Length: 101
Image (cartoon, rainbow, N blue to C red):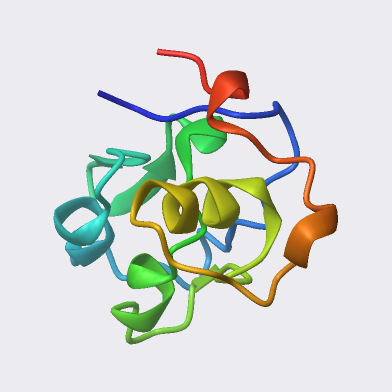
């Protein structure tokens, strides 16, 4: 199941000119945000990104940037695992009720 919250709010960016086509982003992404097209990675489901940072941490050429630990996707995950986060405290308006299948 893919999580979704708001469209077009993800901090994820891919510089295809820097992409080596190694495919690690495809392998480590828990939301299947990426696919490989020949020797270049493509973001095929941007709004499914949870901003976990796994792709950017595994991208040796630095083609991927994302601000992990920000936004409502992070808050939703922390709520699922009952982890109190410093991201937005009690004022957080993020809710599992807002997640779409």
